[in-house]
Amino acid sequence: MKTSEISGFYKKSLKERLELVKEFGGLSEEEAKTLANTGALGSALAERMIENVIGTMPLPLGIAVNFLINDTDYLVPMAIEEPSVVAAASNAAKMARPGGGFQAHTTEPIMIGQIQLVGVSDPQAARLKILEIRDEILAVCNEKDPVLVKFGGGAKDLEVRVIDTARGPMVIVHLLVDCRDAMGANAVNTMAEAAAPLVERVTGGKVYLRIISNLAVTRLVRVKATFLQDVIGGQDVVDGILQAYAFAAADPFRCATHNKGIMNGVDAVVIATGNDWRAVEAGAHSYAGMGGHYKPLTTWEEDGQGNLVGTIEMPIAVGLVGGATATHPAAKAGVKLLGVQTAQELAQVIGSAGLAQNFAALKALATEGIQRGHMSLHARNIAVMAGASVEEVDEVVRRLLAEKLVRVDKAQEILREMRAGE
Ligand code: NAD
Image 1: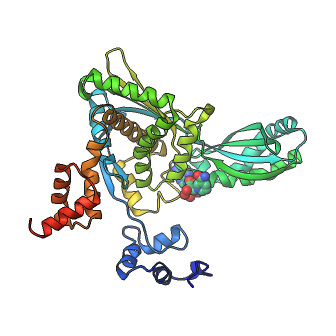
Image 2: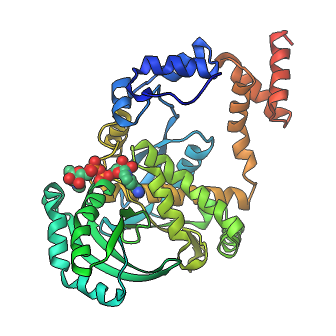
Image 3: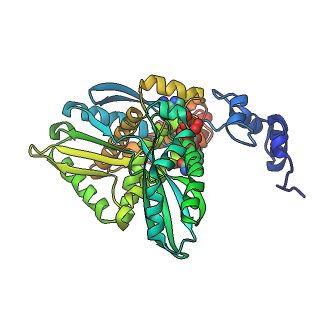
């Protein structure tokens, strides 16, 4: 009987682990070899990044062209498995240029570290006691990270909230930490742990959680772009996009997909630069849901000249140091290609990619529908899935599109015909 209970799996070499996995999953020699290919990362580095490594999971890396952000040109690396995204971003960025491209800025890169205090009978008084020792708490935090302080960051302020919960009132301390060019989770978590004993001492309560919040309301990026009416296809297109936006703003079912389209652009750049996309995703959707009504992360309006004006506002906690950003060789090359000097500048590029992606999706949806653009790229995936070789793919795609039937069974049929010389 095969079992997934394997003691000391982590102590085995990558090769030994792979051998075990191969046997467990009935993988072929070829499949095991595919998993073991560690590509640009290399096995030594992959093993330093996570546990129980057996290989890597490669994603295509594409380059979005045409981006003009704050009067600077960027080539934007995007790592994503979904067809159409890179093309759509490039297209949208091209259409934004006649209106001046993207105007982007950010708040300071401040993250919130939370400390959860329970077991105090007078939570409001406890709140004041914590605020009274604000300077002492900040000093203890900053002692933990002199490097961050040297770069102008560090714990800057403190907020204390009293919240009602199913287990009674809790006192929640927010440490406001300027993370400069780090995403900051490790830095903030370390500070929250260091501050906790002071909070317990002064209140007599008990601290449980000490952890960063991904709802980074103090680390926002804001981007605006004007799409000239003539450039994007006239008043009908403007009206269609405004209708689509109104739909998303009024309906959470549509809004989820509206924001998903934004995240197509955002995540692809976040991943290509080695950043934590789960953190950015969590921040984006919790920000969209603030106030109890799930909202679009973008807005769309018509200006006085009939042009379409789009904005995006969302938290984007990314770094240029720490995590995988400075260790993953492909991420490092991606950051170098972008030429960004600060994490804030990187966030501006990512926000612009999100806004561009949203424009492209809304324009397609409000006019010809999304499937036409999607289908030709989707057809490539279907052709490969059906077993087409590199030489056969283009012809299979051409025939699938001509017959307007993009399905694996159809692709297999075409392949059979092609191989039979028909
Ligand atoms: P880190 O601790 O590896 O690097 C940050 C440190 O780099 C700073 O504390 C500072 O000492 C130093 N540094 C050097 N130059 C700097 C500069 N110019 N600006 C700022 N700092 C500089 O990483 P991190 O950014 O604190 O944490 C990011 C990692 O934490 C990611 O891998 C993320 O996946 C992970 N993480 C995330 C969560 C979450 O989002 N909820 C929770 C836990 C861990």
